[in-house]
Amino acid sequence: MPLKIIDHGSAEYEQMVRLRDDILRKPLGLSFSAEELELEKNNILIAAFEDDLMLGCCMLIDKEPPTVRLRQMAVLNNLQGKGIGRALMNFAENLSRDRGYKTITMHARKVAVGFYERVGYQVTGDEFIELNIPHYVMEKKLW
Image (cartoon, rainbow, N blue to C red; front, side):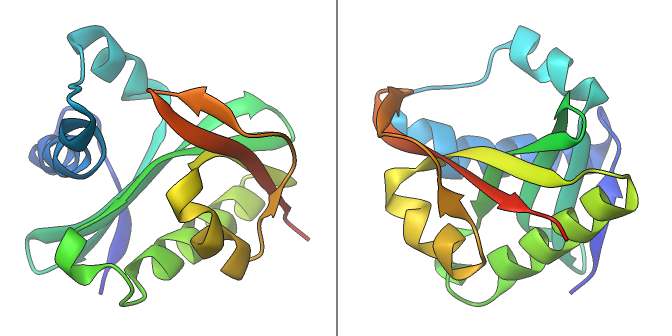
């Protein structure tokens, strides 16, 4: 399963937007605005593929060095629990380390906290509501 950085505005990026929309936004009755997508041009966009099919994705956003923020983690529903999310996390962490970051932080949906804990992340604050659903701030030190 190849993992790679993809370019904003490319056909792969359009596939990434569709995947994130299907998995993360439509179930909440939400969609992406053109302004939101334009802001992603400075992010590190990561995806996992099987041939030309995107299996999962995430992005890294420069927060305040030495911290980077993980966002928009999505894996095809029928493939969740098959190791794709773990592979994306390992790739994102290694990439972050290589770029000099010391910590990854995120706003994790409450339903995903168990997954992130299994890959070494810790809840660092109280539950809060974002996009009308419960989230937690989680982070991991990159040693």
